[in-house]
Image 1: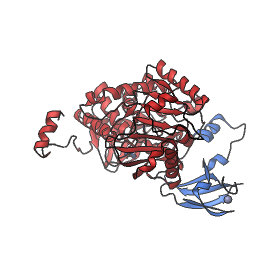
Image 2: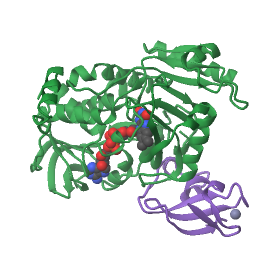
Image 3: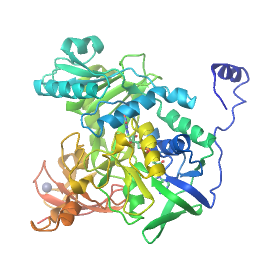
Image 4: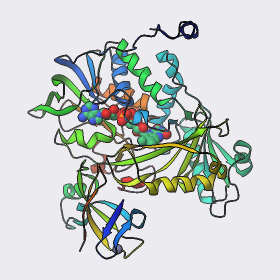
Length: 416
Length: 83
Ligand SMILES: Cc1cc2nc3c(=O)[nH]c(=O)nc-3n(C[C@H](O)[C@H](O)[C@H](O)COP(=O)(O)OP(=O)(O)OC[C@H]3O[C@@H](n4cnc5c(N)ncnc54)[C@H](O)[C@@H]3O)c2cc1C
Ligand SMILES: [Zn+2]
């Protein structure tokens, strides 16, 4: 089914009775060339690009719940390409370009809104660091503008410029960054993959692997056993759990991250504003809600909800950055499980088990990676070679020392 | 969440800071193999369920505690001092 303004208009007149389910609900077949575990953003884009870029269509995505019910539907939807380190920089740059063409590619409105991301700076040291980061982004071909305090005032006059602790000195503005509609991204790719013949199988939890002589032959699931030529994991917060079923122990810890949304308000926040020193960031959804969050809850967690201290801290930091926040009512809060890697960067690689592949360690930043993660993982699954822009996301970098520690905080997953 | 510090009694989560898996207390010997060090520094079991972990009562008596906690329910199962 194609979408058009005319179709929306017509359905409006017919009481929206003409819409049909946009993907099939198939039963699992006995064999697939490739099985992807996890029907989140990354699993769905991987299946889509396996079909689209590599012509591999005998593919199943196995999802234990419903498509898009994991982190892809729980995040704060920020999309950006403002990384410093080679290895991350080219990957997120590639991803942002895919975001820019996504709606045309999928014929689906993912509400990609490039309203800019402003990172606030409060000291000379931070201004220097942002100048360096901005230069790196521009060398990569992306955009960055270093603003002084007046520049920040012109962009977002409501901020607390004269805070005693963190007076605002300036900021780094990344104009092509912004937000997108998270669910629509999952649905758009699901529909695209289904149209290529990929089987999207929901309520199908992978409970074990069939491994013979070090080679994976398929998976055990709650809907029976399925054989496969290759198996790719893309299970985000559950990465350690699923990998453990194949006997792997990974450089990953699972942590809860919370987010919050206020009642709907008239437009007040331009794009995304981040207050790194206070661990707070905010944007405004198209419905008008202020969407904001902060740090992890700091301890290992598999509960998709958080605790009060982290919530309290986010509110305090928010009040410190934009005092007018105190006039808004909080509508709701939620949490998701983050697959925090030991250096804060992801893994897209083969594993010691032949034909079994790993995509994980996305930490709190895997939404913006969604299209490029699938693009590069599909490349790896199809060709057995890492894609050039994801070639440093190796599993053995923790052994060889080629870490990608963007924050420079060492092997402390809750500090990245 | 409250943690029952053996020295101070049940105290609010805000008073404690988290280090991670309790195995971090068992440092390999200086001449241990590179593989042992790689395991110690980077690899984690990361279980969904009971997890032995290290917390410090940073805003209290500053004792290091070995806590068993369920990572799915956040229930604290046991607390003892490390030595
Ligand atoms: C509160 C919050 C805010 C965030 N904000 C941002 C942001 O602003 N920008 C950004 O870039 N990123 C953000 N993130 C991170 C981002 O959401 C994740 O990194 C990303 O969504 C992870 O990839 P995914 O979409 O594939 O994961 P998921 O959607 O979690 O997909 C994994 C899927 O695997 C399934 N699964 C697990 N185990 C099994 C099994 N055994 N068998 C079958 N299926 C299984 C799960 O049910 C799940 O659907 C945020 C996350 C949270 C929680
Ligand atoms: Zn104490």
